[in-house]
Image (cartoon, rainbow, N blue to C red):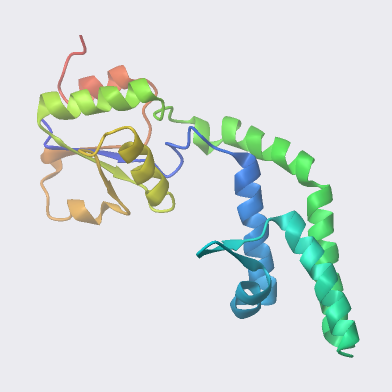
Length: 199
């Protein structure tokens, strides 16, 4: 029986995928890259209570208009035109938003995200059962989405399943002691591969 069961889950456990949120974060990152971290922190973040929050893309466009006027009043026409160009780029991005969201959802459904459908509560409970029955160490490997995977497991009370960012922890281990899954079409395949029969 395998002692370690490993899932490579870069494109999984995103059952609650929210294309609007993802697109918003992408827009914020774009602004940060263009204007630089210092200006981004100073102009596009606001203090709410005791914490700092990043403005939404719509608010950022309004702020850019305000900055254009301010730069003009200060006589800094170069910065005014630069900010106008940034604003126009963001406005164009916002205009194409709905079409982009439809494409993002389609990509989510048709491509990598849909290849392995572990992420619904029943599947996670099944994995926990396998872990318990085999006494195995179960590890999810997710470099880009590590926090999201940890969150999902924690929120479902599945603290026994570990999350690593790469396969380095298998180094030096006998190949007969672990099994790595890149994709599982059906969880019955998983039970068979770890040497169990599903009830």
